[in-house]
Image (cartoon, rainbow, N blue to C red):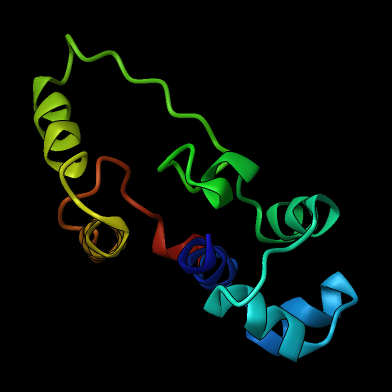
Length: 122
């Protein structure tokens, strides 16, 4: 669970100190959770999930989906997505994080994005 708490905190863009403050605990307590020295009680786990916008299933290791947002895809329209998902299922959490980061880079470049961002809106 400890690695998943770190990933959730980083996903939310929070430092240990910021997340600890939002949870109402000391940074050393959060550090203990992240290092696996002790586990948060259910209230703390729910708090981490809410603040970081992740699911408790992700934190508990029951799901590899970090985001609460659901994605609906028609695989018959985009067969390559099935291949990407098969490859992603073979990755550990660090690999998934890198894959996600790479996808963000591709999208933000604008070269590969389906939706072109109007620069005047920025």
